[in-house]
Amino acid sequence: MPADTTSVLQSLLFDSMVIAFFVFGVLAGMAGVGLIVCRDKALRLFVLLNRHISTRQALKSASVPHDIGPTVKRYHWWFAGIIIAGAAYSLYILLARFNASLVTTAIAGGQPDLMAQFIVEVLRWFMVVFSAIACIIGILLGLSPQALQGIEARANRWYSMRKATAPLEIHHFAVDRWVEAHPLIAGWCITIGALIVAISSGIILFGK
Image (cartoon, rainbow, N blue to C red):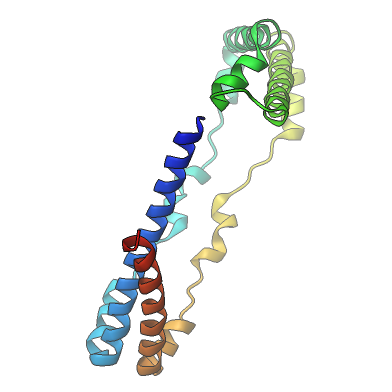
């Protein structure tokens, strides 16, 4: 990537972060002032805005296993042919037609350094190994699907996202309870912290 394009992207990313901090500071400051001036209305608003989004419901479809084994077994020659053809073509491109220098130059937008060439070569050989393994799998699927099923039976593992994200379903209301018990202290703490964030980000944003 050219140096001027990289600098523009970095500037846009930095400005976006500063704007996000500034907006967050302003909104947090409004919430803090609300707790100080009209705490009852602010607490009722917080109750209305609080919503629990269940990850278990969102990830339910991804946690249901879908077994395509019978379909692959029934049309194993078709699947084997597609896998072998794709893997063979990939190996041909990677071994006979791939030019690491041209690829690195196109990515870097100029004379590439040794580290970039090394990374491209490592990725290339990783894809070569992956394509070779895919070719072997295709051959086994066509000639000996039973042997491939035996390997899959030992290698296949099902990982449930619903179980992995179960701790996210636990509600934590300690901070909410503390704010409800001490709204004035919480309001001043939030307001002071928000002012620091808003003022510092505003100076950076509007002081250019």
